[in-house]
Image (tube, rainbow, N blue to C red):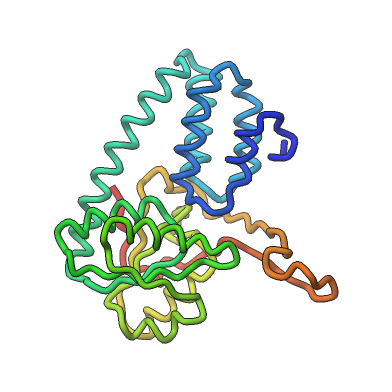
Length: 262
């Protein structure tokens, strides 16, 4: 069941979201369930699974929802309440752990948009006011602009760059920090395209490369399903050239200095 076949317009919008990180989308899905409790949970689960196969925190949520609400005896209201309480605790601990690891670094580079990173950077900024974040914009949708704008609203010094500028800007930073949509069983991370390039550059320049992800994003397998997105997002006036548009990629565990989790 694709997003286009969903009759509820507000759910279609969430399922078609190409700019938000997995945590933001998960929060939107939970809020939708709270206000649409009469909807078919089975259809909801099927549509979400098909729309976000690379977002393991969402897949974990859906699996838990199916086990406890569909096959168990837990009410939807109680399930959401317990899940939100658990997420809040994870979020607080993750921010503390991230600040502990990242406090020595004042100039940090990241890529794309992540509400998890935003919260961790804001928490870090409260004790490190000299913090500066270089945000790579995350083409072709440029969702890094969202993160840059949000960080700026908190007073954080931000510089927005393109992915093509990373090779030059890398000499001006002390560390790279990215979020992750999934941490595979072998320690590889799945994140926005451009993340692996950044990790390789950090390895070359002997800079630490950190991945921030709570444990809802940890997978029990090593499979990664690469999805091809609309090539018109890259070039919408040419049909005679093969255009590949992939949002996510795998970066090997050996490129990661540390996974910061809760």
